Image (cartoon, rainbow, N blue to C red):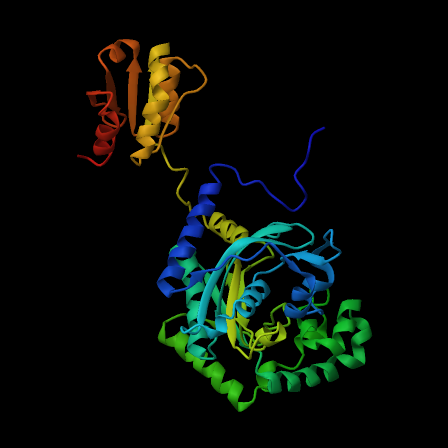
Length: 425
């Protein structure tokens, strides 16, 4: 029986995995510069965490979660997003009591959503995100957006656009919500069943509907910017001022709403402009979620964060022809001819690797010419040639594959000599 990979998942093979490692390393380094620390949460959580934290009117909770019962009858869910688990940990570990506030965290790992697989949208996907909990300063909003933009900028992406909006505070949202309900109610029967359900639960989600996005009432819906109170306007102005100070270009889009219920005030997406990326142009999204910590059982705590898909990032890099570093070449390759020569290779390999040298050898019985070809294919900088004759004198030949220079050294000194030669000593 031939087993097939589950739909909506992928194998990341050698040669491709190195690209993932590079973007992960870049994201980690930028987080280090911004003083964000890594957090790792379980891949599955209690189902109620997402129903309460993400929102029971969202597509994620209603249609996309991988929910299952364990042997104790408890309802568990493979995490569909990263914010709710981080906030759950923040509450459980009493991070609100830490001296240094805000608590600035980042995470990366697989997420799971049952949806129709398509280019850039998988059922198992890797998400990277940051969360800053414990400050309502608009400067933190700008910092989070700057961090996200830096990742794309430093990986070389062009035509990346930051789109922002304000969803307002509770009072502003309530006023806008009433206006939306009044706007859609007379013709709500023209919308899909999901939108009809959302009308009285969360009418803002109608604006984000994929099925009815071309309906004329969507384009004429009341703008949240017309319902922001003075406090919300002042907050949004501060966020924009900080972005201006940092020379970060942005576009204000009053129709931007995020697909999760917990957002308020600042909301943003990072999009790729230009052709070639298909219908999915969003690379990352996030916003402020004051109130989420309380919903999950913690004290009143403001927070803001974002998440990005590594799959979409890699797609964007590919569309723009940006080549990440290929598979790392070997430092050294040992070629051995003769049974006695082959017998000393494992020890020598171990010593080379212990000295920090990336090294390998042939394990399939190739002849010398084929071994040299293998060394070339793998980009080996130095080849260590061992034959039974050299071994009688306890020696090995080092060959620089770029210049062709050779050096005869003792077997015992080979690891140190190889390391020094690689350093140009």
